[in-house]
Amino acid sequence: MPQQLTFDLPSKTALDRDDFFVSTANMAAVSIVDNWDKTVWRTLMVVGPKGSGKTHLCHVWSALSGARHIQARDLTESDVPVLATRAAVVEDIQEIAAIPEAQTALFHLYNMSKAEGGFLMMTANCVPQLMGLTLPDLTSRLHQVGIVNLREPDDALLSAVLMKLFADRQLNPKPDVLPYLARYMDRSFAAAHELVDALDKTALAEGRDVTRKLAGEVLAAMDQLSIWPE
View (cartoon, rainbow, N blue to C red):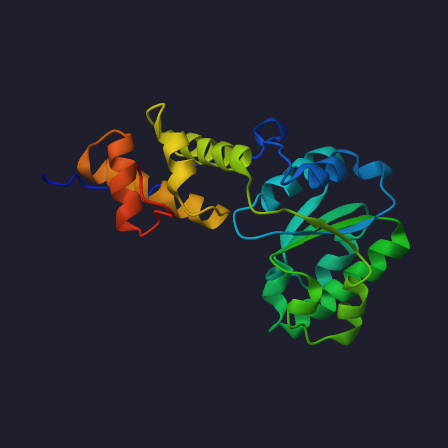
């Protein structure tokens, strides 16, 4: 079958509160964010694997708190006075292990936010002791923050994540595709993102609908069949 020309157009990710599906895997984290102004923790770290919803959860919190966002690798000391005044989100702090200047800036942001009575939320894919940070003062501060864990998905969350990823790409899989994928794919957020991306590209290139047959072909090609279909 001749392949169609494809264009790698960005999908629009839905980041509203109503788009965040709550399950047992993330219920505790969502409860803390929904009640952010009542928690005893004014500095929090959301920890979870890639694709687990850390950025989405932070956008939900930003809508509630008016927080400003910045990537940890872009953080400089000049950003600190503005970010520390009320509420701030610093994402992917594990990425600054090799950036001493950003570590110093985050250390000062932590201290100033605490002194000003502000709220600080950070995201990471691992706990502080596994990040390899080189600034001891920052490491000691991060050991004092509240940790909010996002677990790998249960059945309900995995299906919801797949549904959201398809919707973000404006794809309409056949009704039997989601339960099929949830049963046979690798059970992780990263696998879900990779799988939907592959299905999108394959369906577009070959001019096909997202059917169970196509899903099986893509799963097999990606070696993502956790068990063989009956």
